[in-house]
Image (cartoon, rainbow over all chains, first blue to last red):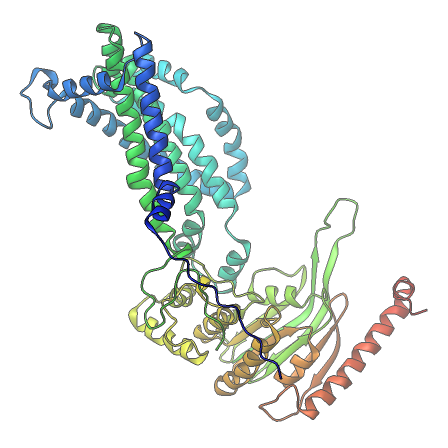
Amino acid sequence: MSTVRTPVRETPSINLGDGIIAFLRSDRVTRWTSRLVLLVLWQAAGLLSQRFPTPVETVEILVREFQTPFDRGEWSAANNELVQNLWVSIQRTGIAVFLVILIGLPIGYLMGRWWRVQAYFTDLVTVLLAMPAYMWALLAIMWFGFGLRAPVFTAVVSAVPGLIVHVLQGSLAIPRDLRDMSDAFDVPGATRLRHLALPSMSGAIIAGIRLSIIAAWGCVVLVEWFGSNEGAGFRARDWYQSAANYNGLMAWGIVVLAVVILFDRGIIERIDRAVHKWRGAVGDFGAAKVSANDSIEEG
Amino acid sequence: MAVLKASKVVKEFPPPTKNQPTVRALDGLDFEISGQTFVTMVGPSGCGKSTFLNIVSGVETPTSGSISVRADDGSPARLGYVFQDPRLLPWRTVVDNLMYVHRDKTEEKRDQIARYLDMVGLQGFDQMYPAHLSGGMQQRVGIARAFSVEPDLLLMDEPFSHLDAITARALREELQSIWQQTKKTVLFVTHDVLEAVQLSDRIIIVAYGGKNYADLKIDLPYPRLQTDRSVASLQADILEVFNEMESKRQVLDPRLAINSGAV
């Protein structure tokens, strides 16, 4: 009787050179290299053109904005041009996004559940999707003037259709077999909404909210540019028009971008991971511990 | 326990395309079941067995005829349903999947439910997500869920057809044992004659087109194994009934005889 020998693979030894190569090939180094190259190109472009601010000039303006008291008041870490104008824009966007969710979520869900609701809203949503945000911005300033209402209105009408389309797709994708199972066990509507519909649509909802926040933020800044006496958009225009200062325009542009990226990475991605933890590694398994990718076979 | 009365049940589905006729899945199905009984509907694929269960559970409505399901005391019966696939919420743990079908969300209910997980051999798995369980274990969760509602009538739609042979055999034996303990009224659907003989005390044979064909009493002692001589012998007899049904169908529809090369 012959014996089959399983070949034993030897564990490769890791030396310092291999470690450095592995580090250089890592995802993190690739990301940071890309950012560094972008920064260098930006600096080079600024040095070559008088109308293109360099990163250094941009940061200088931001420091100056932080050091300037807001509205001729007394300076503090919270009361300066940078923080106060940013806070005004964030508040406006927050109100707008709240309204977008309040309107878009139920309409999108109901469109997916009842064909009559879908038939009623389809044309309206298509028209709103096709309408450029700057048209709403100009109309809103004409209708509402300076203040809170114009930026919030523009952000809501521009962002709602996108959220509706996302939620509609999520609503249509609620698994039929799970709905039939709920029918068979006579599960109440509120329980279905909470435990079946919302988790099933969560991916589409989060993606829709993510895009809504970006759209709403852009709209608020746009309206502030045209018709407001405070906010990030107003301050960017103020530097550009009153002082003909490209550095100020670029500085506020960077702030606007940074807010979106920080919010997206810092909050939305965390929520996404928390909501969808069941897809990957899952917390405490009690008596039976398994790794995320393992499944337990029949005993 | 429950009393199920099906009277001349007809179910038609709209045609898939405009120029085709309507699809008749059930054509006057008529029978009654009651008491501590395990009834299996056996028939070829497409004869309307699953459609019938969907009508009983309220997922579908009949085109004509009627079905009534009552508990022994005459009140509307509580139903449990085990599907072909487990149909679990992937974002809920095992215990939360069971809780989903209960209106009572109290801690006491959670404790009660744990008993049904023990019954199907899933002690210690209550906090796991379905993705971390094998197909057989997921189907056990489906069985525990159906029993946990303490149904008057338990509907089972080919619950082992998607499992490998070894797991399916183990679960069939467990199901017999659970049924012996609970003695619920069970309506089981399968196209596997051997499975039907092993599990049931009555077999209703449904013909193509969703018509009654035969109603057989299985008088063998439990527990039964598929390898038992009596089970295998009865399976052979029932397969003869199926052969007879097939030959009658070919006589009625000569196109089928030509297509199957039986002429």
